[in-house]
Image (tube, rainbow, N blue to C red; front, side):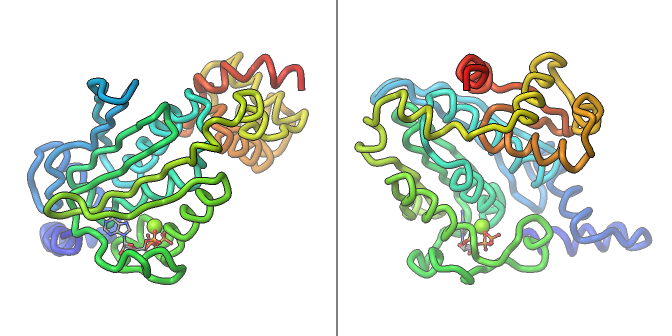
Length: 278
Ligand SMILES: Nc1ncnc2c1ncn2[C@@H]1O[C@H](COP(=O)(O)OP(=O)(O)OP(=O)(O)O)[C@@H](O)[C@H]1O
Ligand SMILES: [Mg+2]
């Protein structure tokens, strides 16, 4: 589907010879805006949060004008929701299954946050995954050159996600959606979920260096800040500031918007006291 769309875009803009990636971005934008077009992104990804079993979910939609932005937005939104509940669902697993939606062309994506963020179900109406067992082995991939413009495309994501889940006593399950598409469920075991809340918090919070704590408090103070300003405030190099912000991001303490500005997450706010004491 993507490649057909690209052919068309490349022909339309033949004089400008856009890169495949630019062409996909353009078509993606068009597809989301018009809810039609070659990419057939019929409706924006929907997130459904269930407060309790049997309750009506709270739903929201996410849209962006490029696959990268959409992947990032979804990862940020979902990891924020999961962390708000102090769930131990690993960010690496969340990121890999969300990034894999590119294989489904983001068709009819529904992300369900269940059981207080301890279960995450990502479903789509793409081609589905026929060879489920092999898809979990490193090196098995259907990523073509277009898709490789957006992801690594080396068949590492599902193995990473599955190992990350196993490491926290959880599991990754691949199923067929109704009629077509894939459903990936990340779930934590009852044992992990019923671990004492304090224990969970300690395990989910990384040990921050003095400089990383300082970077976190700069983010809190300024509200929305980019790596270069953080570097100035810390009197550190840009790459150091960037690395520190990544650590904070990985820990769910800060989030990055589409302009690269970092701001504190709810999880970050809730963790400030204990970080200060540590
Ligand atoms: N939501 C999905 N819809 C359709 N196919 C999928 C989906 N998720 C994964 N797959 C299939 O499973 C394969 C393996 O996925 P995996 O995440 O391990 O690797 P990848 O996405 O191809 O590459 P990488 O994760 O290294 O960028 C994919 O190449 C694709 O064929
Ligand atoms: Mg992948």
